[in-house]
Image 1 (tube, rainbow, N blue to C red):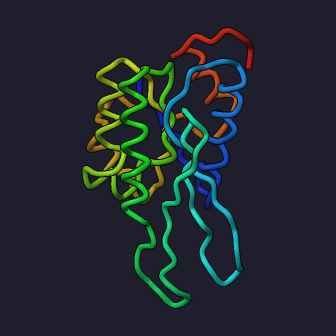
Image 2 (image 1 turned 90 degrees about the horizontal axis):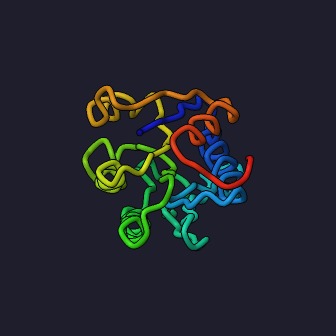
Image 3 (image 1 turned 180 degrees about the horizontal axis):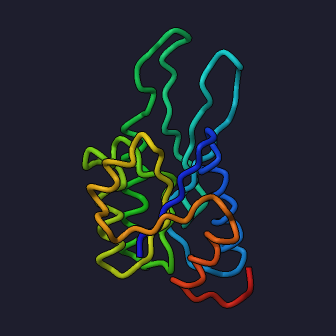
Length: 172
C-alpha cells in the first residue's frame, strides 16, 4: 500500500501530487500529508518551498535563504520537522483514507523527515502516495523493499491506484 511517482522535470512531481490531492479532496476522500508549493521569486535565486498540510490547509516554509552565491542545502530542517510533527499527529488523531507526501527525499533516505510517518501509516493500513527522484531512488528502495508500486506520471493512472486503495463517495 505504498506507491510513488518519479517525474524527470523539476517540480513536475509536486504539481502532479497537488492536482491529485485537490481532486481527491474535492471527491470527499479523507487525506493527510503534504503537497509542496514552489514559488518562483527571481530567475537568479532558487524558488521558495512551502508544504501545504492537507488536513488543515496551513503552510510551512521548508526553504531558507542562504544568499545568492550559497552552494549548500537550503532545506530548513526545522520547518520540515514541524510539518512532520503536524502530519504525524493528524495521522494518529483520525487515520485518513490516504496519506500523500510530497517526496521521499534525502532526509527520508537518511531515516529522518517523513520516513517514520510513512512507516506509521503503513502500520495503520493507510495507503501512502509519494514522489521519488532518481537521486533518492536507492534510499527509497532500501526502505520500501518490494512493497512499493511505481505509478509513472500519468494523472489518471495515479488516481486509479488511489481509487483501488481507497473508497470515496463521488467520482473524481
